[in-house]
Image (tube, rainbow, N blue to C red; front, side, top):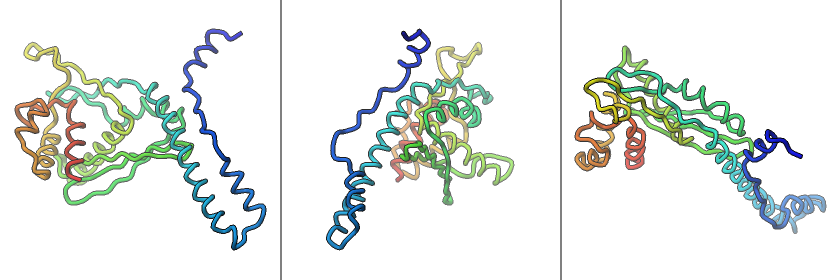
Amino acid sequence: MKNETQLSLHESQPPAIHQPQGPNIALMLQGVIDKGVTAENAQALTTLCDLFQKVEAKNAEREFNAAFVALQRELPVIVASSTIPNRGKYERYEDVWRQVCDPIQKNGFSVSYSQYADEKRITVKCHLRHVAGHSQTTEFSVRLGGRADSETQADCKASTTAKRNSLLQALNIVIRQDIFQSDEADATIEGGCITETQVADLRALVDETKSDKAKFLDFAGAKSFEEIPASRFADLAEMLNRKRK
């Protein structure tokens, strides 16, 4: 008889994946190989190899999706902890990673990054890979030339920001903003407004995509770029980046 701990652990596991019924491509392929490759069966061997690769890729994708569902059950809602003066709070990449790395690895995933840049912006790609062999890539672009003590620091800052946001989007991570607590602030308003660098990023994207500024601000729920809520930045930037592409 199962005790309560065993039952709880069992129930927390993701549902089993039901493999589709059909011919075993691997056995068919092995049968052709065992008979010896000839001019007559070479085409059949090529067809079976292609089919086998497609079946394996589909199975890997199925395992990825099931594991991703389990992963999202375990990902926390992260509470922002780094204070930005007059802006609310922010969660740094390293603090985000500290809270999500265990569930990521537990469910068979790994994360890596690559990046490229042009004269205007840097783009970081977040590669989410699963042990079954399937992977997905999410990219995020940030405008170069933000405020910093040097151009190198500005570039590094842009790279880190793009890296952080690509991870957040790849995993659909929620960052809960802090609430302003002051005599003049409305305590029902969550978080703050976007930073000066983010204002510049959105202005540049709006100009580059020739978007209507008034309609964009109305969609963002703000009267000016400086009043756009920090919680909207990632979605707005992603929307404009898609339009730019």
